[in-house]
Every structure is written in structure tokens, then in C-alpha cells.
Length: 562
Image (cartoon, rainbow, N blue to C red):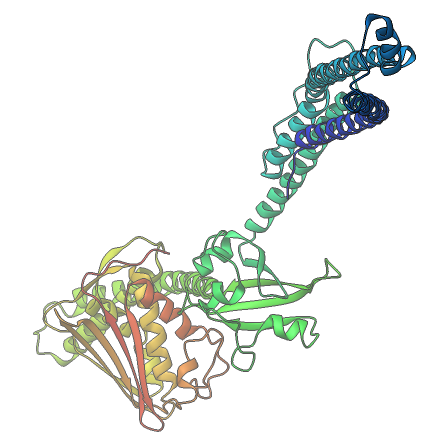
């Protein structure tokens, strides 16, 4: 229980005053009461003697009366009166009585004086108590001014500092000539606060620098203790989890939105592997609840900082960035290759076209149209014109890649891609069936991205049919289901165990046949592109019968922002 120093001092002085008063009163009473008791006892003894004397005289008078009654012949005459008076009343006894009366009067006076003395003593005690009360008040005032007020100031400032307000200081006492220990304590306390504020400011600066340092890292960074609590994390991590620094408490709540730690048998937990099994580093791939369609590479290692607590540090890399980088590399390589081929082929084909046109004008202008030679030379000219258009379409595919949205005619874009991959399909014996619908289907987005996604799907289908086959492309549009594009091949198919993983980055299912190794990024890039368009991609497959990829787009759905 808290008891202020002021009350302690007041209660102590009051208790001391009461004890001193009781001792003084007890001593005073003991001294005077014993004396009064002795005097009273002496007075009682003398009064008893006086009573005995009176009783003796009374008996003598009674005997005298009896004697006179018994002897009536005895007469009292003036001559014998003095004799009888002297017999009845002894002069010595009369003096004794006078002395006793005088002594009784003196003792009565002494009792009165003693009572007066007691009254004076009581008055002295009361006056002393009043004086002592004023003295206590004055001492209390001095103690309050010299001791309690400075201590209260220190106590109040300490409470505010404990709440985090480090700007407060103990105000120095002004207009004083002499400084005491409490003044020195106050100045020392203020100096301590100054040093503490400077140290906290330095610590905060270092914390801000550390936070700015890890915030500048593009990958997600977080530090976790042995109790699954996140100690520190950067902005990239909060973007990956959709959390804020104030709401981010435990790793499992932040990553998977659960209220309990992950089961190590179901999820490869870096914290469990490092702290429980003693592994030095962990590399794994996880999917956070906030990014269900993103694959995150988690690299974890132990953090040696405190011998009493254990920590791990995790670096979380979004593999979609690698997909985008690979996508950009493919576009860059394709653009460079297309530009080189387009210029070379277009120049040579243009020269051949000029020569053919010159031959037609010179040798076949006047010949009838049903002439076999003229028909053949016109066919050659027509094919040259088509051949010149191929590099143009190739340049259109890769020219000026940017993220600007345009209105894409799905049928025309697929036709452009098929014209580019026509030789690849025919060389593998693959027949492609695609008919452009009469009603055009439009989506909003980047046309180059759309063509890259279609190229990846068609190339995978061609690779899945190493021994010839058919690829059927169907484009449909309805107000209820939106735009659907299906790619159905008659290839080798995909097993059910492999099918859930084909969109994972760097995963290869071997559908390329004997054409060589695959990077495993094609379908991951395709899925990323389709989702950026606000669409979805689905796949069904049967081993030995073929695979069907279906792209679904909402009508006129704009491309999602990165």
C-alpha cells in the first residue's frame, strides 16, 4: 500500500507528540498525586486524633452531668466554677485544639495551593501542546518546502518519463542562495534524462537506418524468434502478406492467416528445421494466403544475436519476378532475332518480288490469263507477296514492347501467331484447325503479351505431338460466360500427378519430347499473363489422348495493374 512521505512525517510527529504528552502527564500526575496522597493521609490521621479528643471531652461532660445529677447537693457557685471548668476543660487541651484548628486551616490552604498548582500545570501542558502544534506545523512547512516538494517533482517527472515523455525536466528552484542535496539530485536527474534522450535518439536513428536498409531490399525480409513472433520485417514482406507492421505478430498468422503454428509434416517449416533439427540453411517454395497464385522462394538461416533466445532470418523472393524477367528476355531475344531475320528476309524477298514483277511486265503482260506459264509466274509472285508479309507480322509481334493497353482482336492475333508457327507445325506433321468467327472478340490489354501466351500454348501442343497430330483452336464469345479460347491437341497427355504442378516456375513435365530440355517457365509466364488480363487458364488432360488448355476472359476486362 502506498503511503506518501508527507503523511509518514506528519503521522510520526503526531505520534511522538502524543507519546511525549502522555509521558509528561503521567510523570506530573505521579509526582503530585503521591504528595497529595501523603498529605491527605496525614490530614486523615490528625482528623482522627481530633475526633478522638472530642469524643473524650464529650464523655467527660457526660460523666460530669451524671455526677451532678447523682449528687444534687453539689452546687456550682462562682467560687467553684473555675475549679469545675478547669476539671472539664483542660487548658492544655484547649491549646491543643487551637493548634489543631490552626493546622487544619493551614493544611486546607495547602490543599488549595496544590490544586492551584495542578491547574497551573494543566494550563502549562495545554500551552505547551499549542506551542508544540505550531512548531509541528512550522516544521512540516519546512519539510514540505525543502524535502517533499522536490521529491514530488522528481516523482511526477519520473511517472511521465515512464509513459514515454522524455522532453520533461525538473524545473530548478529560483531565487535561492544556498543549494542543498535535493537541488544537486534534481540537476543530476536532468543530466541523466538528457543523456537518456540522446541515447534513445541514437537508438531510434539506428533503428530507422536498419529499417530503411531492409526496406530497400526488393525481396521480402523477416526475422522470427523461437515463439513464431515476427521481430522485424521490410515493406516488400508486408506487400507479400498484405499486413501492416502493427498487425503483423506471428509468422503463421501473417503468411497463412491461421491461428496456430504450421504442422511440420504438412508444411516444410524453416523455423522447425533450423531450430529443432539444427540445419544451417533452408530453401523452400511457399504460397502465402495473400498471394495464392504466386510462388515464393523462401531462403532461411539462423540468426546469432542473443544467447538466451533463438532467431532465424528469412529472405522471400517472388518467383513471378523471375518469370517476368524471363518473359522480358524472351521478348528481347525474339525482338532481336525478328528484327535481324525480318530485315534480311524482307530485303531478299523484296528483290525477288521486283524481279518477278519485272518479268511479268516484260514477258507475260500480253499473254492471256489462262496461260499456264503466266499462272505459275503469278503464283510465284503471290507467294512472294505473302512471304514479304511474314517478316512484317514478326516485327509487329515484338515491336516496341510496353505495358500500354489496347483493344485486341483475339481472332486476328491468333491468326498472326499461326502464320509465324506454320512452318514449325508442318515440319512436325501437326495440322492446325482454326476458323475465325464472323463476330470479332475483343479484350483489353497488351497485344504482345497476349501473343506470347498463345505462342507458348501452341508450341507446347506441337512438342506434345512428336509423331504428328491435330491441334484444334476454338474461339467463342457470349455475354454470360465471356470470351473462351480452347487449344485441344492429340498429344501424349499429362498425368494426374504432374498436372497440378505444370504452372509452377521451373517445372518441366517432359512434353517437349526429344527436342531437348525445357526451362519450365513457359506455362508459368502464360498463367501470369492471363491473370494480368483478368482472366483464367484451365487444363484437362488424358494420358495418350491429349490435352486441352482453355483461356477465359471477361468481356472488355481491362488488364490488371502490376
